[in-house]
Length: 353
Image (cartoon, rainbow, N blue to C red):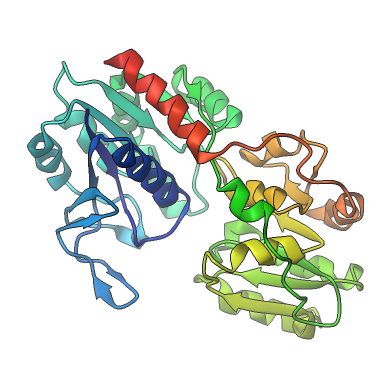
């Protein structure tokens, strides 16, 4: 089958959607399918390299088009339509409701070509500017979603939001993770004199690391390790200084994938206070490494709070949540693998073909 994936950004860009699309594309290519990814990131830079209009990564053909992306979002990229048509695909699978390439893909797909959408929908944005743009975009986005022959949600929470906001049924196929890679990890040594709590992800205000830093004075037996970088990093460092815990907060910056499993495994608890998530893949990774989690009762993280290896809290309840989570056995239930995710998506494709 000739498959075409449409997304706003692709490898070597990093992020939850980038990982999701990469895993699907690479694994379907490994299964013998002809796979092309159309991404709206031509000319952007990663580690000093300007991404070309075309390249092949792990057997997947990448066709990149240029986009106007105010604030690094939305990705106005009409070139997606021409790129999709040039693929002459047997099936198109578009991702990310919150960016325009999905709508351009919906416009380009022929009526006899199956069209699948995974929205990665989180209802709203942490940015007031993006929220206004999404409000204007909503009629177009709604049309694009309803244009799909099948909508696939990555969490039960996302499926519920799609039903509530768009009166749209969705099939739930969770994100996968590399369970074995995390399960067998050797725990990293604490960077300081105390056991550590861990936060992983891009440093944006909505990710909520500031709530963990503010709670540290009430958690004197723990340090905090923060893995990731982003525009909110300086503000977090300044907050740690004001709270008098700068010597207990270790900002690790970008951590290579090869080192993340050990970092998860060495933590006493993993903490995420993010306000906007469609799934929460870092929670799955921490649990696979045997580390219990404290999650915010917001967005798709509410689904994780139902497990016995996770504790759901508000930011004000964080200290009690850490106390309740520490010592719990993880993982308490089966975690989804990428192989199982691809199997379920393959079933969707076969049904539509």
